[in-house]
Image (tube, rainbow, N blue to C red; front, side, top):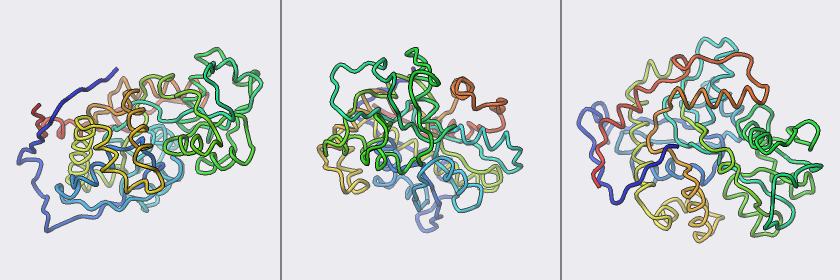
Length: 334
């Protein structure tokens, strides 16, 4: 398990990292994220703390509302960088795309969803899911496959013991659940807690805690974009890493204060609780390097879900050059 602890940090960027970056020469980067969630707090910290601006970048953020749509935006040229599960890159590579997506930085190392039921249940066990219907997300998506992984870990037979619905779009899952569909649903924050506060659903389990380490969400760009814009990719990775370090070294209250504008409908007290929840389950990776071991573990989960015909080569769909440079050149002093 990757774990990183720190106290007060001073971040120093060596001159080599800043070459080609100027506050008078800002480059706009179109970033499409798989969903908008507190789960990605370090990214929003990088925005609010001016880390992207320090690197000469201006981020134009959009919500892809699912990995399939996010990858489509990337491949069609509507986005410069996509932020989603690396399983999408595996699928694209295996489809034989010449200009496939390459992952260059990892942010999360746990699933960020929570299992939500219709009623409060202080003694929940996964055995209680037998005979029930779960809204689990798009078939072949990382949230749905991780849920399958957890269910199988608890000796739940996906075919015989319950009904797993994969026919509802990611962005519509909460609405379908509150409208009466399903007995349980997996949701990200702040949606899961919002439903609980409105007495429309109750969190009964953390899928992230149950599943353990997974390289869950990564930044990727097309092979051609990375080859043509290495300075942009490096600057972007530097900013993300600084956001990760800042998040790790500051209190839940300080983080909530900085990302509050990203979630205007969520009270700051609730944000503090959500950040604590994600920190307590060791959600954020201590550095942005996506390892071969991590990618192989993710592909193990995809194979277990029956969604992988062949494995994509790590060396093709991952580059660690930019993440390693960021870690090397951003010096952290306690």
